[in-house]
Image 1 (cartoon, rainbow, N blue to C red):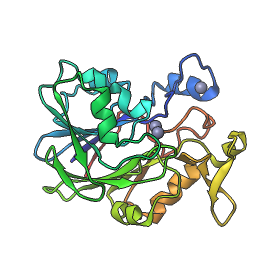
Image 2: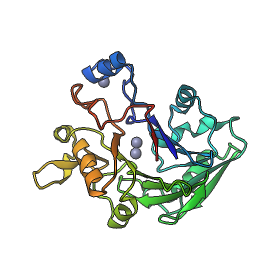
Image 3: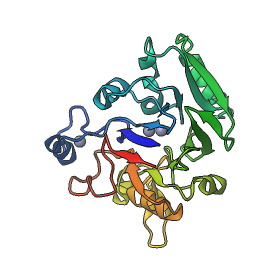
Length: 273
Ligand SMILES: [Zn+2]
Ligand SMILES: [Zn+2]
Ligand SMILES: [Zn+2]
């Protein structure tokens, strides 16, 4: 399979609108971007799966010269992962969208139901309620949703496997470091892990909730309660024994001299698994 990182940024992206911080300026001078999160996977069979509907859908697809996807999956209902779905209006004739079928206590409905209700005007979209840990066949790939930890909403990581090549892509999804054991087991041993690392650990002092899930050296692996720190994301990569880990969902609060380190993704990266 061919994996293209369409969007590697957090909810404001880098550069952030109206921001001239060192990191945003550095991104502009390097000519790189971290738009809102999305990943494109082309299977060996030639079909394509979209992971999450970034609000930047249109510019991402034009930039990478991609056809509309054959299937899609939505990890959770936050703006930066779902609100781009309206972009498929008049683009797709038939688009199955896979989303979890578990009822979220915070909303009283599943991700699948929320997607269906918000986008019921899109006739081409058929929402496919999907049970976690049960692989579904989508766009020639085996896709498994695994619960992660992203309060207050239910959110899911993903394992995407290509039956033709044996390639395995794992996505942490938006999550704290507190990923359930069964999900860790499902995500382990991938060829490529995309791990949510939003800010360095020291930024926890600016979060009202501080940091959580400290390692043995006292470094918080969770920023507040929703996302891993950069350190947490790297440790998750080690723990899952991923062949390769790329940090994604990165924010412009990462200091400019560290924001483009080797394992930190930028938009447009492509991998063959
Ligand atoms: Zn900035
Ligand atoms: Zn989120
Ligand atoms: Zn997000």
